Image 1 (cartoon, one colour):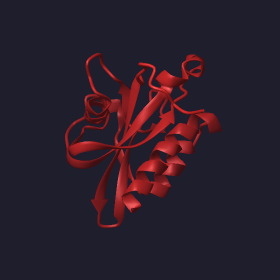
Image 2 (tube, one colour):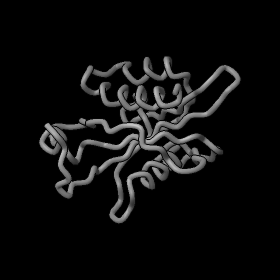
Image 3 (cartoon, one colour):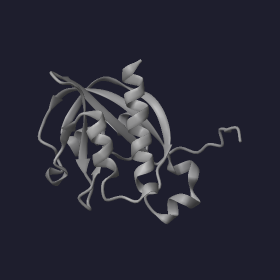
Image 4 (cartoon, one colour):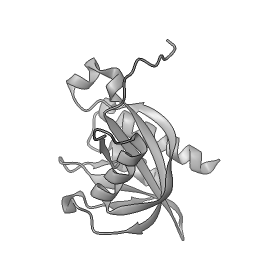
Length: 150
């Protein structure tokens, strides 16, 4: 079904942040409230553009300051609870790719931001999750990594 602009906006934005290391590209993951690894991201505040929210969430959750403008690489259907199934447009979240510039102390210390090689990040994102809960995280990571490999 073709998409139409019906005045909706996603309520969330996601960030896949990367850096170059001696062993290759790494991406940052953070802990969710339940202790599983996830991609930084969260709610878009009123008056905030999605790319601004993605960069803000990256700094809040991972303590990473991105360099430059966030690049949109995909949209994924984020299903975190039953209500998201009833609001598919609001749950269709943009995924932004951001290169890390510097790191600071995260505002949410329990998040334990950690850098992973992309294949290891895929394993961490799927661990202890049922398939539907891991799917959007893996799709976001895969879209970002594919963009980096171009």
